[in-house]
Image (cartoon, rainbow, N blue to C red):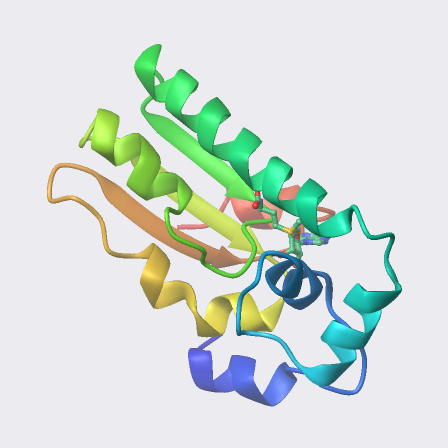
Length: 139
Ligand SMILES: C[S@@+](CC[C@H](N)C(=O)[O-])C[C@H]1O[C@@H](n2cnc3c(N)ncnc32)[C@H](O)[C@@H]1O
């Protein structure tokens, strides 16, 4: 699927998890329906989204510090710097990262995930975790 295909699949009539999460983190890649959904969540949702993101940062850094060099990030979300590859490639530039998400808006922003160090590699797969073979068998 291309980024152009993704544009045609983005449904702005109902909230999407990636866009609501982006809104909770203070991002701009969301629509009114996502903001309205976010406003219905408990007030601590914004702080919890930030805590979740901070946990991802700490966990990825710990794994890189402890020798892991291949990462599969399923449920990537809309790119929010630093993304996983930026964290782990700062520690280990040869790290290889594959991102996967089923929301077409993430694909639309995937270029931000593909700027790898020369020693490492990054890729993006438009895929659903409920169909793991499509991720694991992806070229
Ligand atoms: C909380 S957000 C992103 C979290 C991000 N990994 C982080 O740590 O900040 C969850 C993401 O999971 C994606 N997602 C939800 N259901 C999915 C599925 N069945 N397959 C793949 N991705 C899915 C959503 O599109 C969304 O981008």
